[in-house]
Image (cartoon, rainbow, N blue to C red; front, side, top):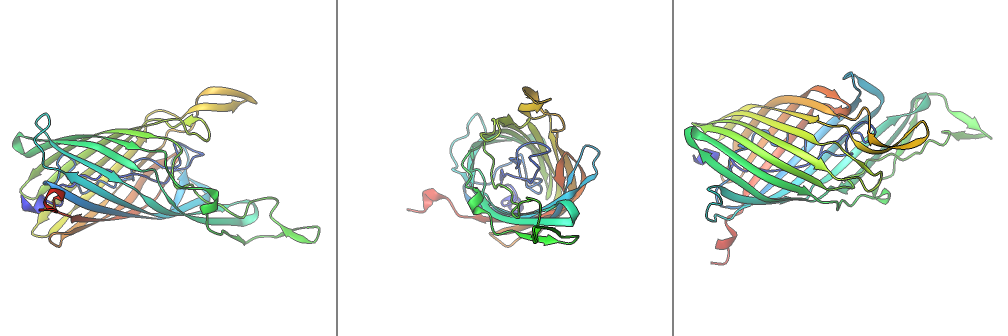
Length: 343
C-alpha cells in the first residue's frame, strides 16, 4: 500500500487555452488532462500536501468544425498550478474519508496572429487565473479494491489580468510594406496581442472519480462537469463542459509507468446576446461546442517522500478549440499533519 501513498493525491486543477471567438470562456476550468496518473477515486493518507503542476504547450493551432487547423493564429504557454490538499484525518463522513483543497494558478501565454500580407503580431503575458476552492472531497473504499470519490469545486471571479499586464509586443513584416504619406503603416492593425489570464465569471464543478487499485496497478477515470456563469464583459455564458481524464499505470519499487488520455466536450453551445441581421438576439451561439482529445505516456519516480510524475500527450482531435501536444510535470511534497506541528 505504501507505493500508492503519493499517487493517491487527488488534485483538482484548472485551465486550458481556448479561443473566446470559437467556444467557451477563454480558459477552461480544468487543465487539460492534468489528473492523468492519479488515483481519482482515492485520497492520500491524513496530512497536508503541496502539489505543483507545471504545464507546457508548444505552438497550438486553432481548429474549426471539421477538425482542420485555421490559419492565422497560434498560441503557446506555461501554466503553474500550486495546490494545497489537506486530509485532516477526521471521523468518516457518510462512511467516506474527507479532504479539501485550494489552488491559485499562474500562467505565461504567447500569441501569434498572422494578419494581412504576412504581418505577424505577437504578444506575451503573465497573469493569475481564478482561485479554485474544493471545499470537500469524499472517498469511499469499496470491495474488490475499488474506490469512488466525489467532490465539488468553485472557481472565483478574481483573476488579475488587465491590458497593462501585457508585455511589449513585437511586429514582424515578412511581406510588402505599405506606405502612406511617406510612412510605413499597418492599416490600423494593433501591434500588441495578448491573452487574458482569467475568466470574468464563476465556475462550479461536480466531480466523480473511479479507481481500481491492486498490486501496483492503477486503473482510474475522473469525470468533471463544469457550469459557467455569465461573463461580466460580454454577457455570454459558456456552455457546460464534460472533462474526463483516464489513467492506466503500474508501480514497481519507486517507478511508475503507464499511459493516460483525456477528452473535453462542451455539451451545449454558449448562450447570450448576439447580433443577427443587425438586431440583438438572446439565444444559443452557433459554432461554440468545443471538443478535444489527447493521449500519451506517463512516467513517475518516488524519491521518498517526494515524487515527480511526467506526462506527455499527443493531440488526437480538436474542434472549435485550440489543440496540440502538451507536457505536464507534477511534484508532490507531503508536509506532515498540521495538528502535529505544535506538539
